[in-house]
Length: 274
Length: 137
Image 1 (cartoon, rainbow over the protein chains, first blue to last red):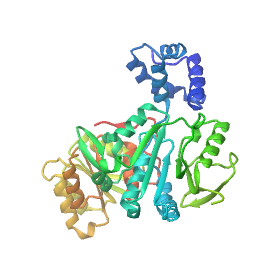
Image 2: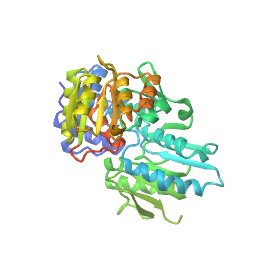
Image 3: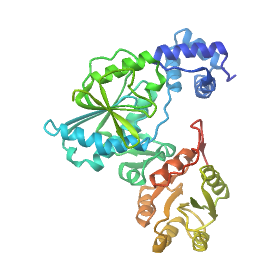
Image 4: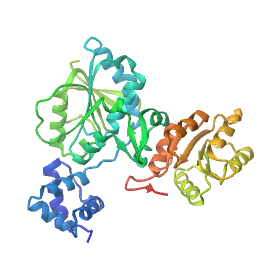
């Protein structure tokens, strides 16, 4: 029994909204079934309805599994050419110049999924900005899904994943093939750290960043949560800091204090008052 | 845009023809390296050749080496599409003149992304709608 009843779907809608501020529209009924079928199988239960009953009685493992499964983890290396070009041509050169005395650089991939975005940034820094090789780098990735954070930390990727947008030159330079997986080079992995973080919950005290990548996650939040997350992100950007959002995302009408800059097919946002 | 798919597996050629066709790319096929050389000589020059490694008559690495001997074919991009995933062999293929490397199994989206890396992003519809589209040959 793989179909979700209307009642189950509505419960899951509310559950996901409460737990992760993910807005699941009515037409995403199919997505619930597609994503939760493997959870049904792994949990050894007979249906999505049984998963719902497990959540209702507070089964923590099932809760985590369902959030993990429903969190969109679609990602690729150097995902979307334009923002990465903006990083190379504008954002990183400016931010590096601004930090040349401090010799520190902090970059946060705030919805890092399985790590490809942050590892891509690490590759760019390694391959194209050798001047920061001796700096103190803090390359930080966070996500609300335990499964993806664990995977990001492991640095192990399948052929299907490694094929997604990774140039062959980087494949041979930064990965080794081991036991059927492609494993990120230790030199690169040692530069990044990954942690669990729920953007939709109150943010704990944390450091400021030079660059925050907050891409393709606001689209899942309601308006109030979007505004709150953007306000927090602004508060945690250093004076010369940049915010990069997904193509369909903008701070316009949600939060003041960002200067928007067109950058080769995308828009990047610099904290005002820099 | 023209593509030449070189693979001894009819199923793989058919699959790649389907993916590339959806992107509006004209596809020619060859079942081994020698047939691929003949196809390029006969013309038109493909914008990209998608080349398997392990094939009869002339394998993929030999084919890449041979193709790069022809200076007049230098504008043709070459993408290896193969199960061959040993690091040393990937490097050999790139040094021989391959521009990109796609490891089997791959998704339809990956083909499009690799074409983009080669500066050959087609203007047609995306390879898949992100609701699957994985190919596990």
